[in-house]
Image 1: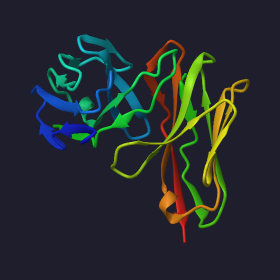
Image 2: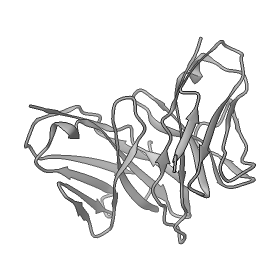
Image 3: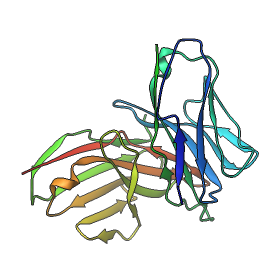
Image 4: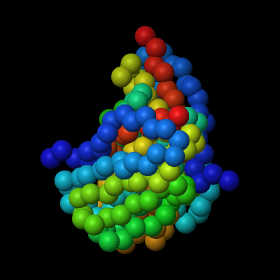
Length: 116
Length: 111
């Protein structure tokens, strides 16, 4: 298994450009999430999905869109990049254990995004 | 108020030392608890889950205190390879697909 993969590893954008960060997992996990990590802020949840066709907002969703057309893929779209979106983006996936219990999250290697 | 709070450190300790980190969470309905480890410029990886009865994995011991709403991680006989940032993670009851991360505690183990 490849686990969770993310592309690209690095990206530089100009303000106003749009782009899509790709995330895929081959573990048949129901849950997938996108986080951003900034110095001193920890990981903050952007959007998450509990299954194909179902997505919801996290703590910091503004400026980002997601969709989940398949179990495997969960792309994150930046609509109009801003310097405040310069960050490291991590995608993660996990099983549901049911009864309100969460299973381990597996993370991709991250995408380092700079917006000029 | 943040959902999860951690002392950012850094904790600078010699090899062989015992070091402990605490993490406090704000929501008493939090359901699942974890410690993750993150190496510099890498993705977080699960170190251990934290159970109500406490649990141990080799040199690592995790404890949960629901009454005081804190989680602890104890590392015994520190190794150079333990140098990393340790992230405390909680989820809420009935919303377990949302994970809340602390900002991490940095540990430097020195020779």
